[in-house]
Length: 112
Length: 111
Image (cartoon, rainbow over all chains, first blue to last red; front, side):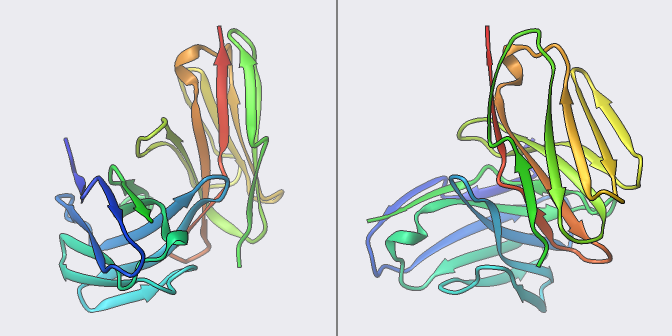
């Protein structure tokens, strides 16, 4: 069952283009997160949100923006994509028990 | 800033052997998580460790937490090929809501 979904799953774009990655969840969790994964660097936090009105920057927010349209939807935007934003992007929600995080399937983004 | 170090980064082991992956972190924490990632896939939760001395086991994997030493271990017993994956530990700050991930350990089990 796809509790956390991400669209698109793969995207190739060009330098300077604006791109939006979308995340939806049916878990009913308030807290949502965006991470990027690069080889050898693990996952790094970009932005997180505790509810529609609460958005927080993570470790590597420069060059990114987010929108929390509803409890179930959290979007990540790259206003002007650059090649070093090529990475695997994950959305996650955080549960009520043990603060465990649940991850979406990921979006593979390539910026040429 | 909390730093999380895993070692080894790469591990190649034969089927049937035992091995341990280590996760060290730099700041007091009350929560540690282990995840598995298959190539091209998402992260799957394996263990949640919430207190000093916590030990969890599932199949051939056993995770433990020593909060005083700021160390968690993931022990693999009698490895099988299906365990080949990348394993991540993640640490939550005391009283906080963010996770800090280790760099991952890429495990390959050779028949």
